[in-house]
Length: 259
Image (tube, rainbow, N blue to C red):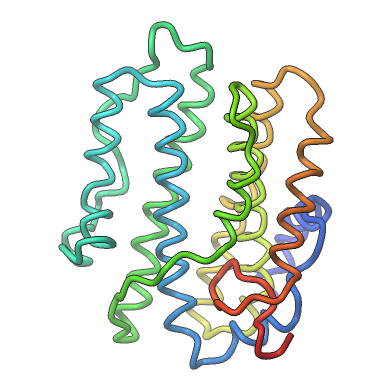
């Protein structure tokens, strides 16, 4: 599709960063109209989880107590909808921006850059959550919670347990999740209905920047070359994507029924 052409410069470094492409079997399964509901619902929850991950990072490492409470309040309507089935499109409208300033801890060793990048990422992920919900609403697809795939858990299980390496690993993992999402939006767009295709293409720019922001933060906090650690998680990520998986989701591996 023509809209994708202008984004090739964004996709080239992402495709080089990922250690394997998404298998065609996954694209075929995700393109099946019968799977649209699970693709959209899992995408919806992935947007929320991406925002939560960024929120937990800055709550743990960077912000003062008042800001930590403000971050929780910011997420409450989205979490109420996703986990308690409270609220709807109308109650979530306009909630993606935070009204209070997010302030750094006075003794935080991490820079304001971590806060600034993560707050911007959160705003975008919550806005994307709302946009996915709109697409579902337009199709009469009711929200039903679905269990998470093995993907994020599989990456997180390999994190170091000592700081600052834990934080560095979290940031590297965040980069891979964002990069894979970007690659999959690009691969799926040509197979989807027009409104979803345009939406997926529109996500490429922000998702591409997100993965770069995560990597930049990881490198800055490490203060040294982390190529080896990035490649380590790249191998784990590629294995999760390229091996049989009996639980079809947005970040799942090769659907087992066609593996």
